Amino acid sequence: MSLLSAFVSFDPVSNDHGFQPGKIHRAVLLLSERKAAILFAMAAPKSSPPVDGGKVAWIAGLALWTRNFMWPGVLKGLGIMLPTIQDQLGAATWTMGWISSLITVVAGISGVFAGFLGRRFGMGFSIMICGALISLSAIATSYATSVVQLACFCILLAGTGFGVSGVLAKEAVGRTFQTNYATATGWAQTGYNIGLFSFAPLVQLFLDTYGWRGAMLLMGGILLHFSACGALMMTANIGTRNDYQQLKGGNDAAASEEARSGLASCCGEFVKKASSNLDLGLLKDLRYWSIALMICNTKFASGMIVIYFVSVAESNGLTVGEAASIVTIGGILSLVTKLIQGLLVDRGWIPAWCLMAIAIVFSTVSYCATPWLTSYWPLVTTMCLILIGDGIISSLNDVLMKQLLGVELLAGAYGWIGIKIGLLAFSLGFFPGWLYDTTGSYTIALAVIGGIQFLPIIPLLLLRYFRYI
Image (tube, rainbow, N blue to C red; front, side, top):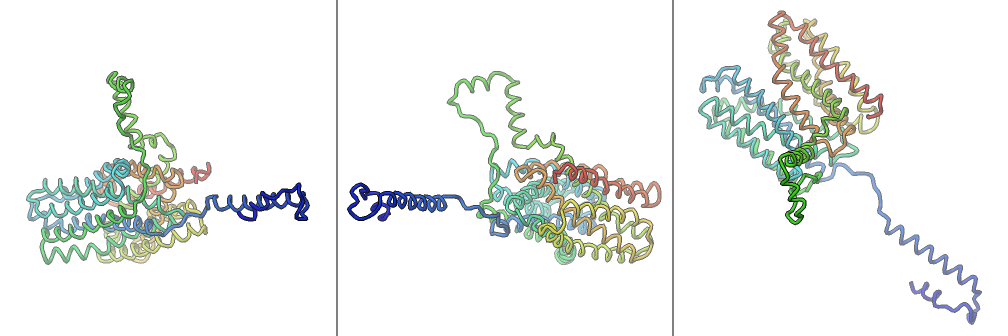
């Protein structure tokens, strides 16, 4: 600054210092340009690529992993304790199965409101309350004296907690991971596999040692750890789209008079707020319906094979132990595949849509071939291909949804798709068993499931053709 001031204060007309006036002006201009360039470079915002894996991102991933870990624990725990609860409460087998199905339905319905709750109260606080509800459902169930009480505690508390928290945790991962989103979703999906492996022997140990009521109390303590994930998210301050509609103030008399003009105006305002808070605009978006078809079909198919595979293997001549070992091998390979697919997609070695198309084709062929196989190792091969494909598809569904709809619509999309998944499982879950009872074979049933699994290839290829993915 002092050098520039000296140049500026110098009188070029006097020429007392032996300098040429033209040279002085050029020096002033050159120094001013350099100074302006330096100041502009300092003031310009520095752009940097999004960084994944920081504290906030890892906390979001931990919350989703924990939720996926505990979801099969609750359902598996109810299944293991089913005979004991039947004896002590006098419940029928179909009643307990109905309770498990309704937990899924309520989880899907409550997920619709997750986006609004997350914007209104914050993701962390909402997940913390959901963890408390899930834990309370297990603790309250231990004091149940009738099937009705048990159903209310499990369906209302656990269903709501899992539904809202599942949507918010997925949205949090979508917001905090950019370049490594496929890896993050794959890692979080492994919680489901680990939950299946670990909860079965743990619940059986609790049941043998403390009875079903004591086992439920201990389960409640374990499930309460999910609230800690919500508390960590509160400290991390993961942001959401805070655009829920608030009531207008009373300063504008004209607006207040218009609001009171009639029932039609009130209904219109209600519809407008509901559409914004619940993302009803998604229901008019063909991209949403495309990804919804893909997710609903693949989840329904994978759920049916998990339920009926042991029965299929027995009808093909295998023992229960051999069927269980096949499922275990396939589950381990599925866990590994969920981790590997993220590396393949995030490093750009293969596009997400292409890997998903390959998984759909191989799993469809395996569904159709399974009822024709009667020996151990061929059934191991088909079941492993099915579960590996399911591991890839379940992770890449989240990746494709973010590509199609963007991060701001993730909560609404997951919520509305959750309703469809719950209703589909509740209304058609009996269908493969009914076909077996009618025909005496699983051939037609698995062919139908294979067709359901193959249908998502159509919207997937159309989305690729029109360059949406």
